[in-house]
Image 1: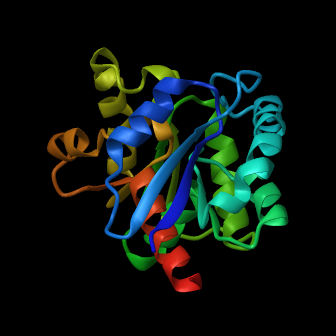
Image 2: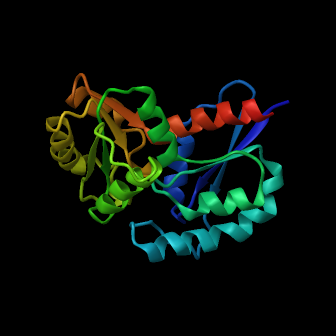
Length: 222
């Protein structure tokens, strides 16, 4: 019997969900289903608390109605999103965020240093603090910080902004980052292009690693 996993876009932009669906390939025995936040959710989550809270409040009623249809859930916002914890309160099935998944992967690559490339500057301090919180309030020497491309999440895939991504990525590389986590679902699919621009640096598509870990956790719990 196949496992049914729900890939959650917690904003109301259908284009983001389409990108997620085009990106992911279903492993054998796995069916990915996709959820886009209702229209009353923000079109993008810009890092400010109001949009994160609004996203969670918009999603939970719909997810609560359908939660029993799925064997696991992936929240595709690169943050310590409260929707993760709300879902864990209403289901015993695995619930994972792409932020947490990417940090678990980074630990497996120790002692390689890593940094985060994100969308806008509002995320820099938030993600830096979230990394410290993830590691129990301890600053770890492997983490080289978060750098924003200063590009709106819905425009990250637009080729005319790629030079900005390169400029900002270069900062992380110059800090000694061997691994760069693509810290926004809007960056998903860009890792092959970035690898060509920065040979020797490993770029992690956080949606892909999140889906791989969710598959593993869901199979383990089954």
